[in-house]
Length: 179
Image (tube, rainbow, N blue to C red):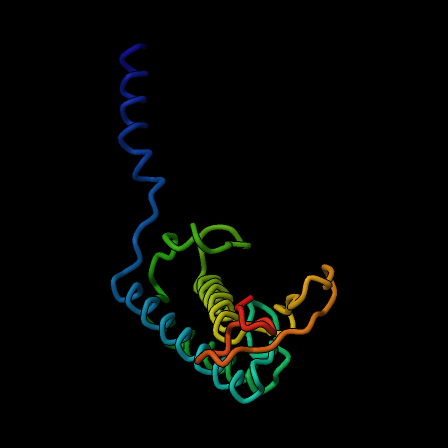
């Protein structure tokens, strides 16, 4: 009886870790995910930058996951880029084991992670990161308004001026100090 338990314990230790590990996606799928994801992020960043330059840094030029930007032309262009992302990944990953991506991506239907769920995860995570980059590159000056004098109270919109810095990203107080 003790020998039987030892054998079962040994089998559990040897076989269980292999059953828990996720199989790596095929090299072709991994390359497709990396290339298509980078291309998608680059295209969306460029679209957002062009929109922000045309509109003076409007917040409607910042993409976010699963939400429209409020700019129909930008939303349409992001939709086209998302379709290219899907096309670039579909052939390479259609028959690949995608379980390795499940740690980072939500899987609402349960295992296994589907290609559609991976595409949604990749698109949403990249849109959020591009939106964050655009927020740094094109700050919303009205949201960053700070007091130039000690008389401004919290929650009150105060007078500020933009500096002549190359990016225009810094606010200057009237006395020339950067806020």
